Length: 243
Image: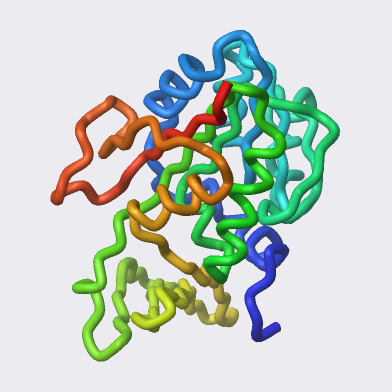
């Protein structure tokens, strides 16, 4: 497979996703629980349930959506994983016969959509599935083109007696595309874990929301309501459907 598809991520990453040093979910869970209120929530790109499972344990009623049944099966093996209804579909054009008070999309998953048009379609699909007054929360990294020299980079991030792990990236500034591949080299062979991303600037994301009929309500640098500023490495955007 040479082209990135919505289904690409899960089969490649399902056995290693939970080994990555992701941020602890408590801050996100607190934030989302406050904004979910007593309504029903939907996590887009639910994956292995890093946030969904502790959020459900807090009493939030929620569903999930993911393009990859393989990665959802990892969540099914965890306590509470069978209690969450998960729909299979593309976050760009999903259709569910339910309305939600909160929809959320975390950890740069919006960037997995490879064009601006697909990302706008995602906002539009979210707007169709929100109740009046419902909220959409998006978490993403702040783009930093200065990370790349000569339109690419390579970084060795783990070396052992029996393995080497390398991250290799190419960067397309004109189209805002990062093609990233994590390479694991062992005596038994080589494994590739790709992540192709189309990043978006915060102002661009606000415009996508407005196109979809959603109103920007706030942006923070992390889940603890730290203000977003020029030093923020990530951002959390909150959008709302009119009453």
